[in-house]
Length: 125
Image (cartoon, rainbow, N blue to C red):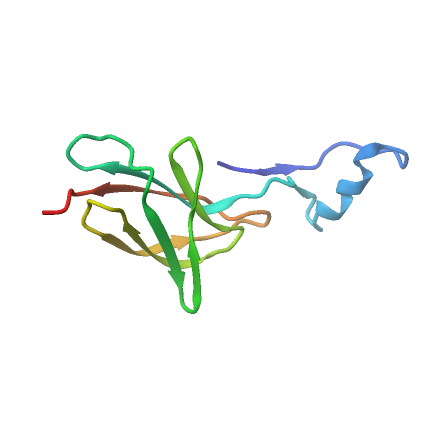
């Protein structure tokens, strides 16, 4: 998802958009005010494909540790506007934990560039 646009219009000093001028850099790039998560994950049962909604997903980048948020749509998100190299660990009752390493989140002049991880969890033995 690219959230970068090029500013080509002329704004009047009384325009309600003047407040957005702080988001335009020296090369004319205009950035949106949208908050972008660097990592999103879709968590499903590896055998049935059914979404797992009771999982805990933890992101680590050096000393930075965060638990990803879960949305009703089934997606988990984290690393909001934060680039880095992450390790993601997923745990859920009744499933084997799974870890993904070296998830690299980069950024453009405006926002992080989202990375999606497909987490397929195996039922516990």
